[in-house]
Image (cartoon, rainbow, N blue to C red; front, side):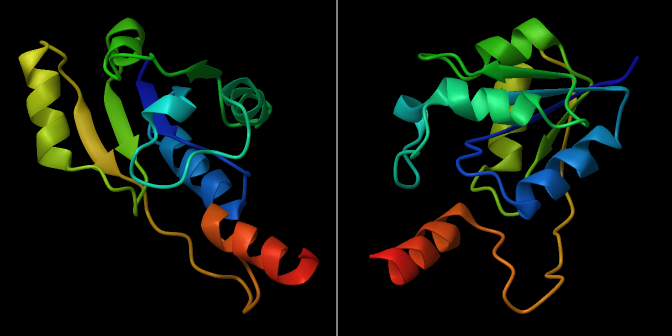
Length: 142
C-alpha cells in the first residue's frame, strides 16, 4: 500500500484545496492530510477557523482517508507516525523541497517529496486562495 501525505492550513476550503488533495490522492492508495496548527502558521496571517474545524472539513472530503492535526512543537512527528511513501506539497506552498528532504533524511524517513500540479481557473471570477476569498468578503460585506 502506497501511503501519501498532503499538508497545509486549509483555512476556508476552496477548489484549489480540493484539486491539491485529489492530485495527492492519485499518487497512492491512502491519503493522510496534516492540518497545520494555528500557532505553527508563521508565513501568513493566522487561520480564521479553529484547527479542529479545519481538520473536520478536510476529513469530510471523499479523497481523504485520514486527517490529522499537526504537532504543536515538531511538524515532523506526524510524518514519522504515518510513515509515508510520498509527501505531496501544494504547487504554490512556501516549502523548500530540498530542506524538507534533508530534514527527512536526518530523521531516517525515506520517502519521496513532490509537488502537486496547479489548478487552472475555470472561469474569470473563480477564487483559489483563502486570502482572496477573505478579501472578497471584506470588499462585498464590510
